[in-house]
Length: 293
Length: 241
Image 1 (cartoon, one colour):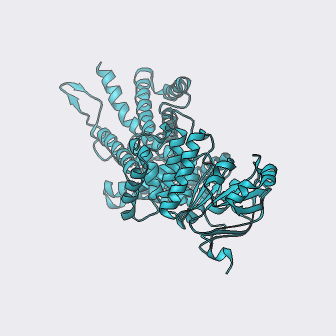
Image 2: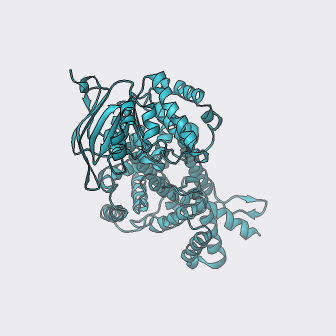
Image 3: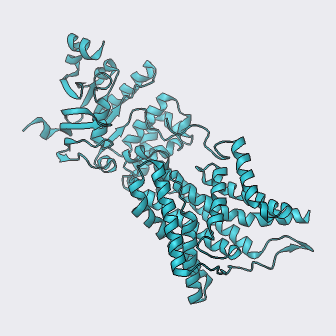
């Protein structure tokens, strides 16, 4: 029983990381119907920038802030320069472009920082876990921070989408860009904003996860695959689905890791996505009716 | 002074293609202020493309679209919309994932913050059916309610010109009559200029001041609506009633 509680709770923190990556993919997918394969690479690069700042200033939070700001800027820059020209082209063009961006970013990181693994600090203690009486919960202060940070950012985004006029414009252009344009919405700027926000959330995932994975030019690749899995489980179109998908995947993979062994994590992720897609082919939180008429 | 000079909206020698096929072949029309103009004609005559070329969702190849004398041809749809041209597309364009109220709010976003709330109150007062359903997803509305919603949403921006594409499509005759009556009332109350594209020529000519018949992307008749409805040979040739 104690093991079960430990595996469940430690799955939550990783699940939140997958949720953050999934959320960044969903933000872009909703607005542009493009799957951003460079999301993990972008997060890796902003984490290097954070490490640079932390090493120079000795201040974790300065690095944290720089990573988020850099994510915002990088997302907007990529949309404006390389995505805009392929937005109305066949979908495969955009896929190739985002893979190209990934290759460029990982190559640049290798050139600038080299290929060796670097350790990355945690915001709070990642070792001394909480316990109730003599029962260790398998949860550290840093796990709690990760969970709170991702939930806070997702919650703020949800509120902004729901209650602000920019949020209304973004939803309208995601659901029906042509009608939004006819109502005077400047859709182009909102697409850039969507990419910028996705960059920010990806950067958040990068700084939060890298303490437990080490930093290297390809260190976010596997995290990206799990985040993508979480997004598909959630339905790709739903921000709530992304968070729930991330949580479900994090906990399932934690059980696989704990009971079956770390070698089977990839297989566990494949099993989870296969099962969900067999039961609900368009994901857990897909809209009930067809979108395009 | 020509008619084009005084027109709220004028289209001059418009040429537009759709998927490589020429659809509008040098078409000219002019709408006088606060008029209702019905555009009728067979399928493929270019009616919908005419509206799309005016609102910028199709880029005209040649010609001018004059809004109060300013050429807006080949500008982006959001710019043309902000110049006072509201286009309600065929098949309605309700954003079904948003609530009724969100659809309405969206229509008012180009206006100043101060003007948005009164516009919403006005719309909900004028259309009690929308007020009753304001918190519901727009997907739950009936066809007639959706048509009312898109017209109400277009009016939220306080446009000068309303482009209405096939508002009768898929609606029961009784509802069509209500929608046509609504268009008439709106013109009377707000001084709106309306360009109404309709397959249902009889219903459209009944409320219009002028009727324009399109055939193969050209104007073949431009007459007072009553005269057009009474012209037996034109009806037989182009309108089928």
